[in-house]
Length: 117
Image (cartoon, rainbow, N blue to C red; front, top):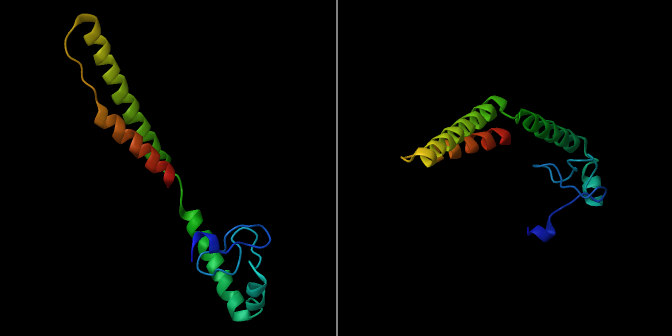
């Protein structure tokens, strides 16, 4: 099935529930007249309800890791502050400075990964 042939709901245009292909994930109505005819079977209705419940449960389990986000932002900001501080000292009086680019990148990665759930 190509992207152009993808099934969408005839009522709202959203995609069907994963695993069923018959019921819209957004409005919970049959996605097509054929799906409506198939859904008159009580056993199939029960299977679709189970698929919907499973999809809702899985989506509710994805949570943002605020602790990981705070850790990542803190590490990135501290590393950036130390890097800028050493650069400022070196630019005024001469000498060397240290750039903690690894800690800045890791902190940013950790923060973004934590937001993804």
